[in-house]
Amino acid sequence: MANDLLLARGLVVAYGRPAGLFTRRGVSPVVLHGVDIRVGKGETVGIVGESGSGKTTLGRALLGLIKPAAGSVVFDGSDITALDERARRPLRRRMQMIFQDPMSSLNPRHTIGRILIEPILLHGLAKSHAAALALVHGVLDRVGLSRNTIDFYSYELSGGQRQRVGIARAVVLRPDFVLADEIVSGLDVSTQAQVLRLLKELTGEMHLALAFISHDLSVVRSICHRAVVMREGRVVEEGPCERVFAAPVADYTRMLIDAIPLPVVDPGWLTRGASVETATSP
Amino acid sequence: MSAPRLAIEALSAISLRDGNRPILRRVSLTVDTGEVHGLVGESGAGKSTIAKAILGIIPSQVKVTDGRIGFEGRDLLALSPRDLRAVLGRDIALVPQDPSTALNPSRRIDAQMTDGLRLKRGLSAKQARLRAGALLEEVQIRDPERVLDSYPHQLSGGMRQRVLIAAAFGLEPKLVIADEPTTALDVTVQKQILRLIRSLQERHGTSVLFVSHDFGVVAKICDRLTVLYMGKVMEQGSTADVLAAPRHPYTKALLAANPRYDRPDTGLEPTPPEVIAALRAEIAAFDASVMGCRDG
Image 1 (spheres, one colour):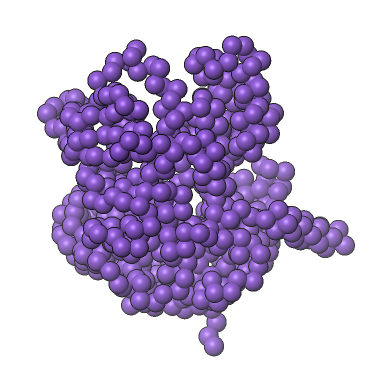
Image 2 (image 1 turned 135 degrees about the horizontal axis):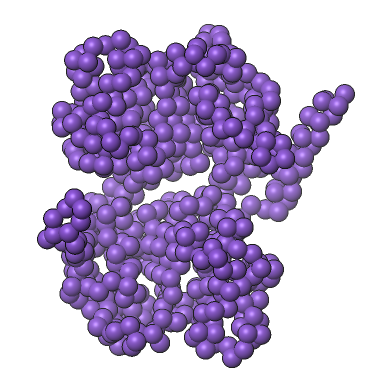
């Protein structure tokens, strides 16, 4: 499609495993078996699946953090699959990431100010420290953090504040594409609501393309335009959220949706559904 | 009506590290025989502190200042460590939140499951092994012999949680404390585990105190629930009543913040500032009244 910002075709990723203390070399499990995905300009796409589905690996492959064994990633019309580190550098500003755990992704030895200002200067978005600081003030206002947050360290902030810093760090660089990997899974429901609302507003205002990785289908339904359902390294279903949730095609999608406990009393729910099978080890 | 199996009365606790800040504010709740009671709240609400108080594992920086935990006519808080140990495991068992850290990584499942059966139920090693196998079958593990001979790292998260549930219910306790038992699990596995807890609980008439932050999970498994905020009970009632018509503004706010796939246009509502202000005032007024009592 003409409006595709990011287009991946036939992505295959296998993790090579070097010989370890207790393991022999040679096992390289395939985690992505030829995945196609596209994210349009300004579009929010939810990538959902259970643990081991390959959703995090897919995200990393899209950003070029993992080299695929096969397949291609095209960003804004140019193939970026084979680019080396140097050639990729100009793209780094345009493709940003928000991490699951801001506690471990924000450097605890740097103030929030330094964390936000350094990339601005590095990417040449401001010519002076003062100009960068002005951009930082602007983005802090926008994400609902007070300006004196720059004097704090990440561990002095609450989980919700840290995740706002993570969002500010990504959007202050004016990217075209942002990958968000399970960014609300550690938050309380009221904090989660604020962070998701903010993200939804920002993607609208900035015409930002967002790939939103989550295990929570209700969250995906609330902020995404399209959903991509993954299972064991394959896309089993893809489509507009409205259609995927109202009339899922794949049995697996149906099973995932049925397994979501809604906050309504429904005595038959526990014993209903496909996931009655007994467990085999391991 | 018979007496409730667990009766927590006016339980109060403070944090010694944090300027004697109150963390439980006169919490009262009862769990009847055969009831699953949900303890719901966000982080810092005091859910885990209550669970730990029942199990006698309150951290050293927390001090219980008032109240009692009545179980079978005795106050657990007043028991000697020796008497409490006799009750724990035999009459009260725990299903922990994180199945990956709750099991000893260096011992086989067999050894970990049979400990309790031998020490608390007086079975021989051979009997205990047979019983452990039967228990694993009861939690729908198809090849119990293989699981018994496994180390925890050889099992998936869902399997480990099944093992822990089997171990907890296996001693036929009267009360099970389930502390966010499905939070670390995938949604399809979560459903299986909830089904399992409910069916074991019904079959054995066990009472369950089910700690959770998730109203969806609570809706599916709990008969009644208690909503906590900053260590204070905001609302109590049958799950059906509370979910259909929440009375406290905090409960309403939590439900409105929860995204729901069946209602994409609702959810993600920020808690209104006036609700936050009212909550703070409610907590402050409570603390002031307690201080007043102490001074008077």
